[in-house]
Length: 319
Image: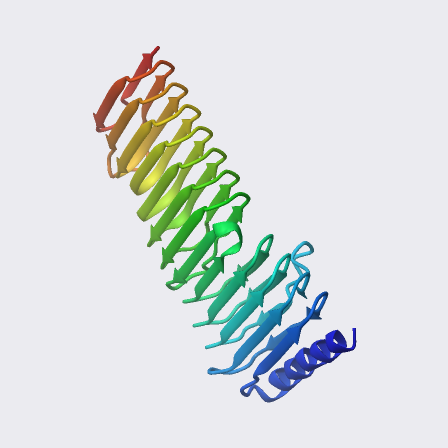
């Protein structure tokens, strides 16, 4: 308890100095043992300031991730370097940034049953990295660009991998949930606005990839419930919607959308199926959308839909 109070006091003291002097403010906390807690708050501090928190042991806490308060709380901080290292089991870290530019955050957790939460609001040109090595899970979040960056990732299982990379993107964000084993998910967003990517992997040995480039008002959702499925989507333009659901095994689904006004749905409940939808809409936003859907209930089917223009509709049902 004494160690916890010292760490908390250090963080609060540095916050006051930063807010009054607008100068560099560096916070360093090192804790070893079990059941420690730390807290750092900074506001209006200048470039080249650093926060470093290292906890070695089990059941340590940086803030309160469940409440979203953040063990490292920063308001309008620029050029910050934040490093969090937790070595042990059942550790928790929460971090929040409100405003600020050119911040770099690194969170590393080694052990089992660890959790990390990072919240950003109106943060510009930020880079975030989260690595979890407990039970073989890995999360890597990279952000850069001119608007708020961020991602939500959850891993429950073993041997999962998540990579999220965003550049010059805002007003939207990826969400990746993995509750099985040996799943892989990647999300790339470049120059995107109001663009949402959702991946849910509840099975085993699945792979899902979503790439948004130059998009506005798009939504891409992938759900994988089976084993050994592959789903991939490449989306450009605006007002596009796609949904892929794979509840069978060893299926392959591919969607390509460009320009505007496309809707695509692929549902695979069988095994060893292949489905491809390619849609090229039009430049105008005031057109009837293209609609395409493929449903595969049986095994070993192959289906392809290609649509260009606006107001097209297509459907394939294989069973």
